[in-house]
Length: 305
Image 1 (tube, rainbow, N blue to C red):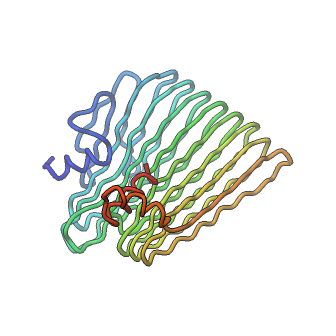
Image 2: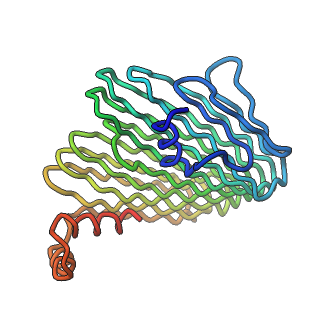
């Protein structure tokens, strides 16, 4: 891989050289490199593009990297990845997609990730999206995440759009069984004429299941964002969804949280807030010697941290 591709890997997957543990690197629509371990197997699908990541039961302290990079202008792909996490396992999965487009054609990656989290298993899933390049071609990504968590299982999902993505439709659908837990933390930045839509749907099907969905976003310039979040309480459960957004310049942000209780003991909360940067925050930082632009950057970086 060239220096541009290596830099993408560093940004989206914190890879500085060959990582320890299992990994699968997809580059420009093909397998670039793969490594498996005793407890983690990665198998190429035979019926459609994508891979199966199979984690043995009771696997502990394994870190798995599955980044995707695109550096060819005009490349469009759709990939299906299935994660089968064995009962009692405890693993971290680092994904992400980076697009470098220096041409005039659209480059796009659509990833459909399906998680099957076993009984009492724990998963931490980190996904970052990033685009750059000095061409006129768009850099688009449409990630879909389908989550199924068995009894006593838990998953923490941290998804971040760093910058440079012209259009994205981010869909997450989850079903939780008894005593299962799901935490989702989204961080999103748009600028220019970019468009981003997030659509979360969480079904709390099992007794004492719980979910916490939190989104923080910043919309700059003429960009547009739509945040949709639905939590369905179908049993004795607890759910919380929250959207906080900073709006700047001529941007547009819509936040549409929705909670539905289908059980008398479903406890559900939703919150949404959209606003500009407070003037007193800017003034305070500017008195410390920062310019207005530098002060805005400090506030935005702290908000998305």
